[in-house]
Amino acid sequence: MSDKRSSVFSLILAFMLVFAVSPSLSEAQSRYDNSFPVRVGIFYGSISKSTYSVSGSSLEVYDASNKVIETDSDTLTASVCQQIYTSSSAESTFESARISAEKYGVDALVYYDRGSFYAGSRSASSNLAPSGGSKVIFAIEDSPAVAVEGSKDIYVSSDDGVTYLGSSAYRGKLNFYIKGSALHAINEVGMQDYLYGVVPKEMVSSWELEALKAQAIVAKNHVITNYSKHTSDGFNVCSTTHCQVYGGYSAEQPKTNRSVDETEGMIMTYRGAPAEAYFHSSSGGRTEAIGNMWNYSLDYMTGVKDPYSTGTPYDSWEANMTSSEIEQALLSRGYDVGTVVGVKILEVSENDRVMKLGVLGTKGMKILEKDSIRIVLGSSKFRSTYFTLKSTSGSAPVSRSNDIGIRDSGLKNTFDRLDSFVSDRISDVSQDFVSGSSFVFSGRGFGHGIGLSQYGANNMAKEGYGYKEIISHYFSGVTVG
Ligand SMILES: [Zn+2]
Image (cartoon, rainbow, N blue to C red; front, side):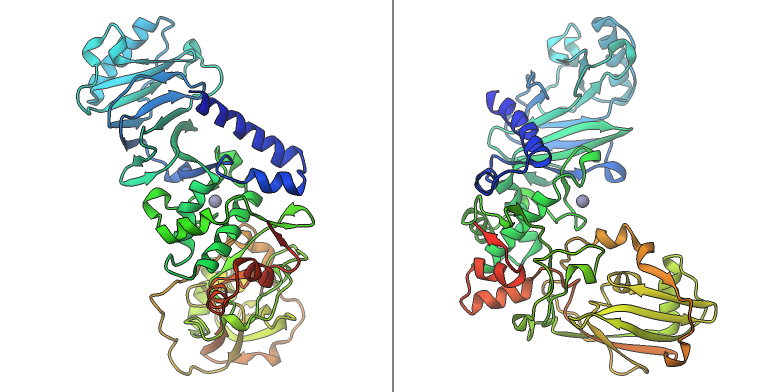
């Protein structure tokens, strides 16, 4: 009980520290161990479900104030209340719920009334008691007559520390709560437990240990600096590429767990504050300044020469796009230039990546800027903005390896503001355009090129560099400790 209560308090404390106070370096470093809570959105909003199957060993169900509902069951079903009960009498409310539970075919129910949970087996309606793994409906009262003060959250944990949500296993606890009409399913874990489930999903688990350790720290900084990204949804980070891919306990591997263990509590700081940390699959030989891809700059991500990312499966690529394919790609994003008649690279960064690509059509011209170039043209085919342009079609695109693919972090930076990266051209420079019915783009690397190159990190580790040297190579001037 007390550990649950203290973890709630530490969550509140963490919010206060992260958002209200600028901690000193030593405070920052000591806090980011497994006592630091991370709430990970598993199913929420449009991907939420109305019912969840939960299983584990002697499941314990409790509310946000740690009031425990006695259940020793190894399975249960978490479900949205099917009906609003408005009686002010607990007994008649329960009777209404019982009738409804029978109607919906569930064996028993647990309902929440004025801050308390009641299990069917503890009420007068004992005929609703679950028997041997039967399904339980959580009837959460939400009517004015039984208005609930504070949280309506339900937490579930297993006595062996691993709880299953469907077929996926998670450490920590599961949290279910209603937002709008959706029942959200969240996994609340400590920082180390979170990273156990991230590193094997974001990097190949058999790669060099020092590269995995660098990835563990980068992933940790990424969640720290994006801790409020999903605050409005009721958690910290989601489990997809929008934040970082998280597979929970089911994804864990011994080697990646070791990389997390050996970097416990360590983070990247720049001038005493946690540094933002982005990563991509392969730089192709040179990383890019963050300001040349997105719309803000950071002193420690200005682009570096990266010979460690050459000679990798994503060293080079070629994309052949017909004028019709380019026209359709633009149209799918709402940009109509008519029939595409020409393409031109208008600006290249100091790190040799294309900053502006002009597309000339019969109805006008669009300029794709920075990261919008590959987002609009398709980032699986158009692997980076590190490219040159030929006029006519040549060889077929290079075959795609089955190895690690695109692992960009932070893609949402462009998706959220795509229109700000795409503009109309006023002056006429059409005579300089490369014209034709198809265009061949010849490029290097895979991903946005910001921050750590994963293939580069692995090659550095093979050459004997440690994780701190790997991080210092890709993030200039940061401190790891
Ligand atoms: Zn997210």
